[in-house]
Amino acid sequence: MKRKSHACLIVIMVAIILVLMVVLYGTINFQLSGGSVLKTDYKLTGKPLYRLDISWPKNPEHFTGAVFGVAVNHITGLVYVAQRGDNVPKVLVFSTYGDFLQAWNTSTLEMPHGIFLANASSNPSVWITDVGSGPYGHTIKQYSPAGKLLQVLGSPGKAGTDVRPLQFDQPAEIFVHSSGEIYIVDGDGGLNNRLIKLSKDLEVLWIHGEKGMGPGQFYIPHSVAVDSFQRVWVADRGNKRIQVFNAVTGDWLGSWGSCFSVDAPYSVRLTPDQKYFIVVQLNTNQISILEAPPVGMIGECKVVSTIQLADDIKPHLVDLDLKAGALYVAEIGARQAQKFIPFYWGTTIGSFL
Ligand SMILES: *[C@@H]1O[C@H](CO)[C@@H](O)[C@H](O)[C@H]1NC(C)=O
Ligand SMILES: *[C@@H]1O[C@H](CO)[C@@H](O)[C@H](O)[C@H]1NC(C)=O
Image (tube, rainbow, N blue to C red; front, side, top):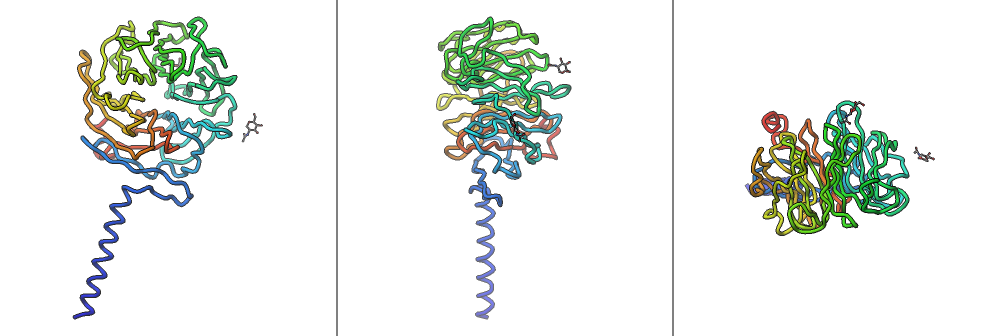
């Protein structure tokens, strides 16, 4: 009798330990065999839309710098991660499955900030804004998928405010529309506080270029995206708001501020179904998912879901896989990129997209 209850006690203790291990698995940093630690701590509130893919990437030891930006080619299944640091490759290429494929060997990048994958379907290229102050800085550069420099916008090494020819000062991000038209936010705390639209042939079509707090003025315009209703959304970081413009005319359409009273929006990207915005807030370590309004009135912003990351993760910019719906987040503090996949992946993904 006594021996039986002993055995019973041991079984119960083992069960408790197993349950604790399972619970802790999701909330502690996950030590990978390679010795690199991915910081995978997070909590969901609101509608559960994404969960972390802890298996991505398979070799996090390739992250050797501070990760500032990420861009996805949904056709070829490649993820471009832009990192900063001395003597580190500035762009790492992973597959969407998490395999490390390549580090770019280019000396033409100083301090990558925003990164954008253009023309995924026919002739992909990678655009990068460089906020460095050396001989290649203050520019926006187009690269081949393997890291060959194709084109430079702006006067390399020269911060400036000119429009013809184009000069930048710490250009923050670029968005290249499928039409070939280009939207630039310039910049990340330098001389300029402007949103520029260029034609396919790099002619300036319209520009909002004033520093300030009023409609159409900016203070540190940090991220830009265009939706499928010809609206341009700008994370106006210093003013803690998102401003909206008509993509064709440049007319101001509205502004959202109430969701950002605690921390500014750093990123603005749309989910492939155009239902939600992904907005990260660096200081509060949050990924906020906002309802995207249908065509018509902008109204007020509404957060439907939040992914609360651990302290000091510092999410900066994001991108989405336009086919699979996965969300990739560049994290400056954690010095890594993470992948979040839509909930119920594989079962109701059809309805999500
Ligand atoms: C990187 O580029 C430099 C200069 O072009 C070259 O000397 C070096 O061999 C390259 N390294 C690799 C690994 O391709
Ligand atoms: C995409 O690439 C194709 C093939 O090079 C080119 O004809 C087309 O103009 C490009 N589209 C954009 C938007 O750059």
